[in-house]
Image 1 (tube, helix red, strand yellow):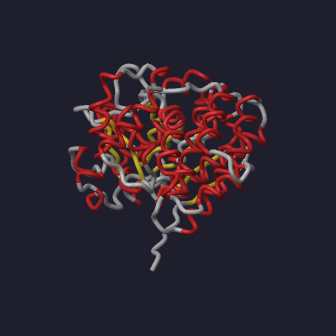
Image 2 (cartoon, helix red, strand yellow):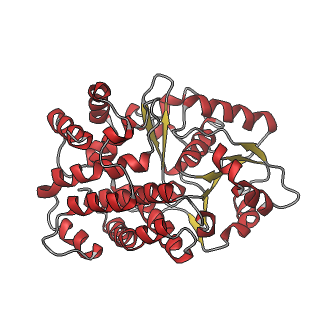
Amino acid sequence: MALISYLTTIRFEAGALAALAEEMAAVGIARPLVVTDPGIAACGLLDKLLAALPARQAATLFDETPANPTEDAVDKAVERYRMVGCDGLIAFGGGSSMDLAKAVGLMATHEGPLERYMAILGGVPRITEAVAPTIAIPTTAGTGSEVGRGSVITLRDGRKLTMLSPHLIPKRAICDPELTLGLPPGVTAATGMDAMTHCIETFISPLENPPAAAIALDGVGRAGRWIERATQRGDDLEARWNMMMAALHGGLTFQKGLGAVHALSHPLGSIQEPRLHHGTLNAVILPAVLRFNAAHTGDKYAELRRVLGLEPDADLSDYITGLNARLGLPANLREMGVTDQVIPAMVEAALRDHTAKTNPRPLERADVEALYAEAMGN
């Protein structure tokens, strides 16, 4: 038996932001906390969101989301939520803002501490339907968090852990590709490769979920066709539409499980200096993991080659390496500023990461060490 559940209500179209008031009414939000980051507040996008709010609506702003959301940021946002009597959240930005908003919605309605809700610590059944309602509005095309059941938070002790629950899925997602027009090429490339990686990893996951697999495969092909054009032509709405759809596809398939790319990238995202972008990490690590898994995925690599328009004997790892180069992304982790000294701690964390369990090839310590070495460019 396959038990399959999909997922939330999504409004997807150019100009969809104009329906914000309607969606707020549908989920019963009258006093939202708007969770975003300083970059969104500075670039003018926030003005578009505030203009879409109904005139009678009282909104409170939290624009202090860090690049990798932290427990401290969650506590600060929850304090503001409670102080002004908010009744829901609007997550506006990339994956960090959406992950932070989900955690705020949880901690505003559940007893602490935050770590007791982490999946790896047995937290899944502790998350109830009391989570405050959230409307997610992505401004990048990458994470798919607007339809995802997870929230990744770095705790005060440095652990970067994930909460998982269907109750964390935003009640509504507003996907408006116009919000991504003019996104800088580097951000477009990095977030686009995040979407590509999500779709590839969920497709090759050994868990059985044919609907998710079909969605993931379409997402891979869509990202492969449109990512370079979106990166090169920031005002191309068609390319932006398709990349936002590819990102959504990745989020819709998280239920099928991720794999070694995320097991290795999650710990690196907890490093305080340098701050490392999750999508870029995924892009850089992906070629090594594709090589590692090649003999353990049946005919799935052939399907990936087909939707990417590659020759039947093409090397997927080489394709991703070449794509990264054309997009101007780093060639290895060392170029991103990762040092050899941090790798032993990363190995330990990767082995504990929940995504390691759904990699198609079992991960042993020596495997993780070898994958990190290859991704470092050694």
